[in-house]
Length: 496
Image (cartoon, rainbow, N blue to C red; front, side, top):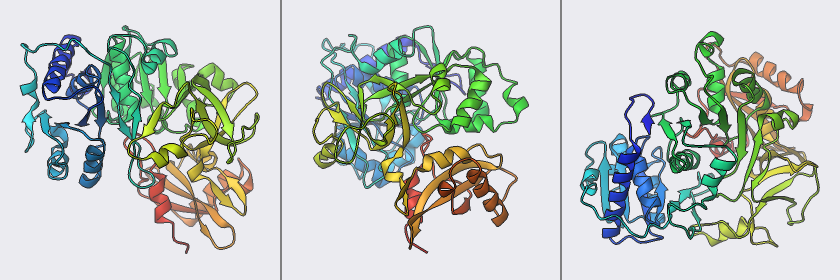
């Protein structure tokens, strides 16, 4: 692993010694297969020594979002049942705040510097350690973003494998669907507490590749890293694409991105015009996948497929797709409904929440699960997402999907970021509102609001166009690129 900005490295030899030593120490503390450790860390190499110590010990590892408030982070550490907590000095203040809030944690270790209430991580790394003979494969136990109420832990079933045996679905998918190998240099620009960066970095390690980890995303810095490290594969979210596309054209084209063979994107809907602009710039190397932290299923679509099925997120690569109505009746091609994946067995449960686990299951098939997304399949089995059911706007009895409107507005030359929500209306039930973050040099006005509304009306059905536009300094996005739309909905919850 190489840190993109500082150049600091972690070799495979160092990763082997440190992770095996920590695994041995955890075993000495009494942790056994199925126990949990927590990781509170910014992007740094030690995070992956801890990660692999858990994975090679049959443990669950819960990475905690360090942007959370202390009580929110403490809730996750307590709820997951972590017996050991590892924290980075880069998030020292939060780590110190939660000490008193997480009394069930028996051991705390810090890396990158001292943290009050934590022992130095280095005490666990000893060349005289005795390697574990039995190394069952552990896995990640991550938490949902908590769009409604407290976040929920997603607890996968542990695989009956040793860590060096094939059979992990993600590693297999990286190798076979994406062609990842030891020769690849993978750029990871997103925070490692999020599912995709954590799991993909681990998957690249499992296949022997090199991970180049950014401390944080910046459009120019990402292009600098691609050129400097001769990156072959990267994974980004659409917001990152938009930030790079907003750079002046001469700046964008001053960087050599020719080593890239694969640019993966996921985590949030990508406006078709944004994706097309990236294809025009980087070539037909974009591959999109749709999945969720729950790991209930995955679809994949290549650039040639997408150009033929514009807007699709692909066909099933893990699991079998079904589209069902609200009663669970399966629908035919072109009919919009809830997206379910069928697996041989239910792949996850929500920790300490049997009611939510049950609500994610199909009423007639326990091995069909959903995260609440809405879409349809075409005649060839390609999935088209319309939106998350919770964000659908019902205006005058008509269903309106915000994503379609956001896609139109995303590349307006004056728009930096956009969210579309439904706001209460006394006659229509809900009315469409666009909340806009403008690009530098522009300020909100009634005239600009009218221009944006007309811009949408010219491109999609008039009834879908926003009835009002608000301008804000910054939209609430998570560091992973996902829009925290619930916060906006709450802000506008009261009818005027």
